[in-house]
Image (cartoon, rainbow over all chains, first blue to last red; front, top):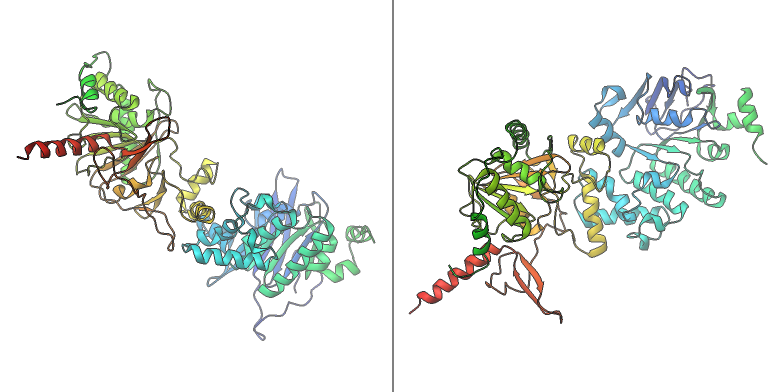
Length: 278
Length: 302
């Protein structure tokens, strides 16, 4: 793993790549990324490289700019300065600013996923679970009802939801199930990169643990890269290879998750780590 | 002619004289030009919704203000106008719009599809095949097919611009999941000329195949939303479907109780308090025609 040029983290290993010998190329690179809402609040000068299959957690208190960073990275809000390079399939690294809207939107619903904190923000609550999962496939031209339904059933099972619920509306689902449904809806197109905004924050502890377990399995099985925003250091410890600590819109420390949690260098990180209930 | 229902509206429209206080076609000339410009753009981009400056009309929204404005802007003194409402020539809405144009434009009106040059319609396309040179004008309540999916106009326009229409299939998927078949029966979404998704106005899906490659020009006017759109003659209009659930039109076990037609769109009518039902053609002109021809045939026989 390599820390970005604009963060003060230590250099470390790169996660195992398929083709040894050739230096792996980062999937997503951010450089001097700045997006502020009012000139003050937001994120500033953030830079990092994310490699295929790597999970990066962004931790920090409320208002530290982590959600803003996620919005900038996923181009939901256009960054004011800085660059984001993404390694597109069959095209190589591309500056997102050079793509047109149609290409960015296509990228966002095929090669990316976005998991919202509240499942209702990421789901169509009025249509069935099956339609929620199959929507991205239909958007890509899937026109065979039987196959769409097969894919939806497969993903429900994979998410440990009883396929009998396929035609039920998500509003009849529990919070944990809704969150798993939202993840299935994103993963159905086999994305390579998933953005998650506090994916477990609105769930109770036992459900959180189960979801994290599921996520860990999925990330490993599918070789997903993920940027996970969380205020919960336990989530970072369980999921992330690498962690960025943000405060006041800036990255104050970055590095291997274990390293950061066990040997925090920055005073703020030390405060965060010491605040964990034991 | 005998006292068939079809003769009544023709008589009451004929009684209306041109009122010289109104400009020809009710709208002023600059408004008509603005509408024609919008219509030309609509014809040039089949299925694309073109905004126009809607005017106050002497009837409420939902009664056909969009269709009337379109008709007013394309009407010439030599045109022959037919107006139908749910297939019928003699409902209040149809009779009043015919009388309106007889009064403000002095044009000839008719109930015959073959004789008409312009047919303004609400909810049906006539059973009698249209021909080149004819214009259909549709009254549209909600022009945006993606509205149920996305409430923001900015978003739906972007979706049209980028042809992001996958969400529409979500609705059809839901239909099949809950009803075992595509249960949408009217206002059935179509793709025009392989590009824009369009609401064909609330016509039954039975009429959707009549839009495809029609020799007549189809103009759609939405008064409340102030949009016009068009399907030019001989344009491909494809109804959405799934490979394993293809588009299909309604079929009835019954035939029309009056004319015996098995090819037309049938309305189910309750005849008495005990719930006796009868199926009759929704297109009254087509039904009358068939009955008259059958009568003539019977009399002609030795």
